[in-house]
Image (cartoon, rainbow, N blue to C red; front, side, top):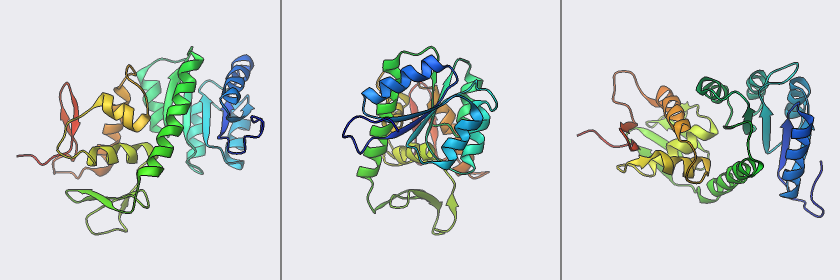
Length: 240
């Protein structure tokens, strides 16, 4: 790995990108920030690298030779939960949703300013470190949902063994909502707390993840745990 001199604690980032100039530029900028980087220029070699070694984050292009980014993410998720930020030139909601559906944690649309990418990387690691620092042994609950902060798991009722399978981002989103039970939480606040982004970032990703959460935690025939407050955001509270 390429690292800053004497920096033994660098986060390791894998860049899977076939545009060599862009990949090298991104790599140099990340190294300047103190990260360690590795570059792979096609989907197959990128997947092999990602599965055989441990990385803290993967920057994954969608349009790749041999295996596209969707397929790389899909196969990787069967073996590892390494965080993924997708880099895509296809600026459509469906492409973004598809990427999130198969396990990407975030996406950025090309062409992007390098400052935006670096900000997202910093925000991601800041959020991860903050999340680990604030979690303690106490549980958080709402109705029959219980969050075990120690193990970062969610279960329903007293059946601790009946864990609801959530992704890292879904867990963080649910935890934020449950820590604010009774209060309307805006999309902007959720983007800030869960994704670590500043104001001005688009918030439609929140709606996508709320849908994912509802599909996993809601029970057919019962009120949804998460209510939509039109024009504002979301709230977890008992209906009157």
